[in-house]
Image (cartoon, rainbow, N blue to C red; front, top):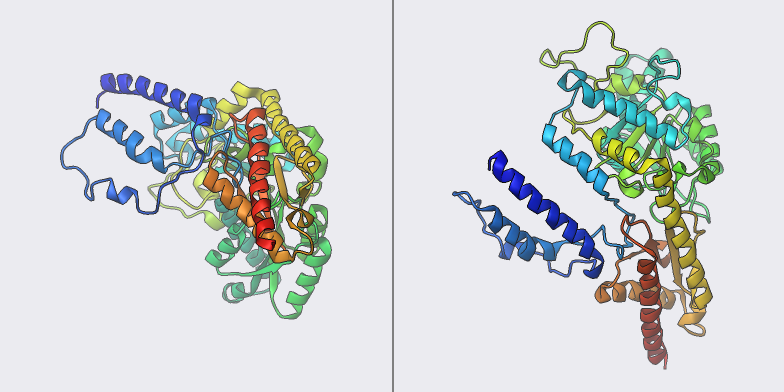
Length: 499
């Protein structure tokens, strides 16, 4: 394919993409194929001779499209949103055009410097403390800064490595030998709650440290009291607390941990304090949500995903550290073929030392496009619209009388379940759980909307995560219609069964 044909096919692709989004809400949101379907449709070896664009395009429509679950549909309410926007796609097109491997400043100065600038923009947009900025107000480089990771999981593992490095340095400062510090690493323990994202446990496993999973309270939060007691217990057992993760908007319920309390314990115990705000961090673009985030100003690192709820195409996970020293020291490995800039390096960051891989895409472009083409006001409108829709959904479910809201609706997530008395008189917990599991199953089979259930302290519940870029109130109204209609069928079947 030369530039002339690419120009032709590229224009066709823009039309295909635009047509897809214009008709997306008319398609069932969930794929209905069975495992292994594609293996039966596609040859088992790559073609030896070139194939045409038309042939591949036709295969996309006939073979790939049936196997796609449409995350961008306004009728997709599963897990958490994975936002798309046309400005984000335009930025990605430029990134693909340049196709750099931007592991250091020399690779492409604009890629490094734009990321530094845009991450400072974003930090200010969500109201982060000034110590997370790369460039101070006086124009000089600060000790902190931001970097774009591929996911919150990558961010979590990255800062756990930095935390481990910091604890080793601390032990050395107290007279421990380097060999002893290495041997003591198996005693390092990280603290998470039973609601923390699984990435924290995975990260501890990868870096060879222990994990202490703590019980959340009745509001599904990690508290100061629980953390403090666990640290005391572990120190008595000879373990070394080195890391704690607090969450601003958990996956299950969007709960907010006791961040000020966690910060207090972390400071007293010399633990690295990381805040995972993968989903709800986008809400901090709206000032009215910032009081909920008290405590993050004390964190050593903070992360949220613009690719979840801030209109930026996957992958774009924003990570900030208050002091990059231990992060860079733990991940920097010099090779002669990776030259460093000499002389004034105040605006030079080798982002390869801020992440696990060496290579990296020019992801700052799509974030730059989104922030410029929507502006802060457009992003805030996007967030507030979804919160208003979630509040409306909450009221509709409550007014119906058959449902109860399980956790407070703060952001765009509504967690509910069919009430016990709606299931029947003198029913047991298993009957209520079965009804809610059946509701999720019926919704999947119906396939007008898509959502998922979860289990909270033994109770099966239903989650509706509102946040699609192209979703409207009509989609939320459809969700209410489907939920109420299928609940009636389930309860009718339940009544028949009890008879």
